[in-house]
Image 1: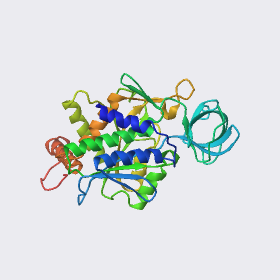
Image 2 (image 1 turned 90 degrees about the vertical axis):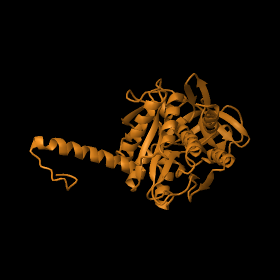
Image 3 (image 1 turned 120 degrees about the vertical axis):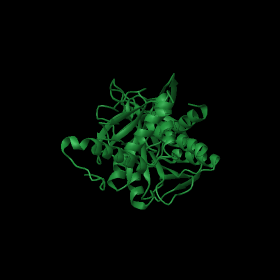
Image 4 (image 1 turned 45 degrees about the horizontal axis):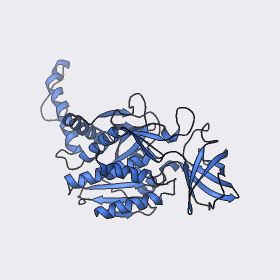
Length: 371
């Protein structure tokens, strides 16, 4: 990984964010796009759309990631007591007594979670925060866990919000690589809002025409590590999530590109997994009729829930990030399309049937796809 791409990670992960309050992230991405003369627009609900290359008559790639992370939004203050809502999924045993950092207009202030109460819609909750010192914290102030925003130890990155700002960083870095290697490749980045609140930005993008109907959508996530996809194990070709499996043709194509890339570059590693936990935006895109697949990087301390029962920084491995960016950037501009790859596999399988089917008593007249 080069320093420029590391700075993309640092820039995104250092900014405050909560579902429905992604403006600090959007502002940073807008500056990134402006400096590179990348087309930057926002759709009707504020999702960010970046475009490069020329729109083709058919197809085109959409790389998608979400800009939010579980966090707090304040509702009122009285003295050194601040009331807030937490939006996102954190198990009930986490949170009480933990430290929070509030990004108030006058500067950052810290507080402690004094009470916690479940509210609708679950799994959101309401809480009272006790400020460390008197401060002006108006309603609508974003809060996040008071853990390191960005810290490197060798190849391991510890951060407040890898899910999914590391995914956003992977999309931006891959977009820049695509522009350098295949300037005419048709690639759109879709960076969505409020995924942690129930895929709200992605759902709106599906219904409002933000995504071209014939696009090939690849959603990028930081997904909870497990024995089959550990930290340091490489990028994950995510064939499905806890809800459904994804597009067969795109999975075939992405897996073939990953194998080819890993043969050519020994530093690139990947695994192919049906991730057992969580539902990601690719399910949304598939359900609404889009051709969608998914890539991921293994994530430690998912949603800041450390193994010791306390809140801690999320973790990713920089080699996994590099493998993910390399794979994502290799998808557009190739000589073989997903359709051609599936057709070649079909022809190979039919050739096997023609050659060996007679051993089962099958006849072949040569005029049909199948006997």
